Image (cartoon, rainbow, N blue to C red):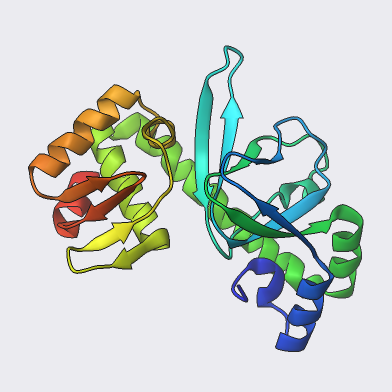
Length: 220
């Protein structure tokens, strides 16, 4: 939690004081934190659980931009560029959040300007990941994108098991397809192929990665 940009530049006492002043929220799966187009008035940090950031097209199709887990922050763009939310934030598991309103955050950053640089660095990192995802849509085939998405999820949510790395990502097949930017049928075909080769074992809203080296090679 202390690696979160909001806390990283603070000493332990200041970080604990800030955390205690923040509002706590508990959500069940599929509950919404905010909707695309809502006024941006708070940032959020995930204590436990997972949250997806998604956008909806004019014809109602949903595009999953990212999945965030414990210690990750979202909604901070509203501080630097006030306006409507650019995406919806929805829990994909039972989730606990802490949040800080726009006015309280502005006052806090005025008193701790060093935190602003940490927050900008965090935003730049997320922008870099977004640009990489756009590049993958152009230059990488669907199986390669599936392999890369699974490896990314394993780095952030994976736990070592006797079989390999178990990833309880909490996503439905449709949500995983949205994250990859392909149809569910095409993504399922890639997953079945990987499973048939012995690279992974599929579970309900989870996957166990067995052959990480082959998945890495396939993701390139």
